[in-house]
Length: 217
Image (cartoon, rainbow, N blue to C red; front, side, top):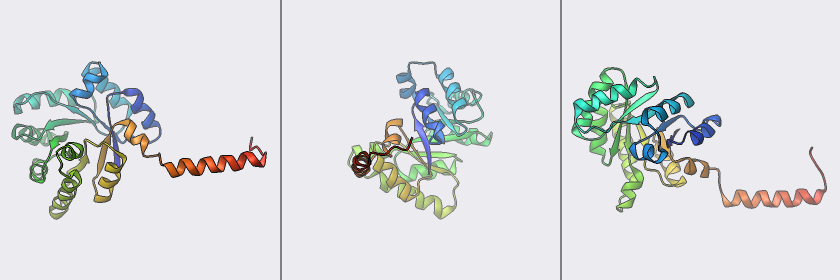
């Protein structure tokens, strides 16, 4: 599974990239707002930090305007993936932009039927929002499983990008099902290294080591 970092915080991206834990980055208008920086400036900086796709989202709602914005965003760097919403106009924009050889991430997917449309439109990625489905008492993992089955049934090459991830369990479960990518905030990715039994075991080792009175260096 590939890890995309869901943030516009360049320092957090740089730290994860140095560890090989950032295969790409996803941004959106809310994350850009949180960063307090110009969208073109911060996106350009992020693109220089990672080799993989950097999703930059259009804000227009009509296909022609989405296409124009997508082309402008794509000019920032070669690894830009243009992010469009899963609306009819978004699908139109996806078809045109992928036809031009550009990467497109179709976002805000909440049903298997929507994901099927995104694949038919040639999307590079489809982003089902796990956490938001959980919020309304639906199981986001059921959606990941349904999309995986549909894509495998028909050989679609669109990658499943599990999004709206809130926990380490979300990432692990999506990986078991077969999502191609998980995009998560830096804090969630770093939390994957944590386990109470690891902490307990380490504490025991350190106590015993101190009793030996030895040093390695």
